[in-house]
Image (tube, rainbow, N blue to C red; front, side, top):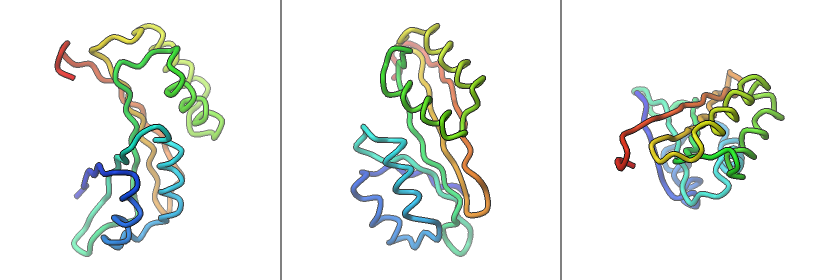
Length: 135
């Protein structure tokens, strides 16, 4: 089972301690600071089994009406690319998509950074489209 959690970033360390999350808390907190530097909340998912939380996790960062000239999504994508988590080709594709949509109200981009104790970090990008006025 997967639990999706959104809470204030200041509450994240206590939440992880309270649920006895077995993963690398220092890494999760560092990745959260990196991914969500300008947001007051942390958005993550946790895998659960009958014994409780498992070490695999993912953090999300969403951008509604993203534009190529917006500093934050561009800086995040460039940083992911420098870390080797986003290929130059994928980075270029996303930058072109951001330039093409130009801040349309019916578009969004979500960046998902996931990892586990046994696996390297991976990045997934979700492009969303929704009817005008629904977001």
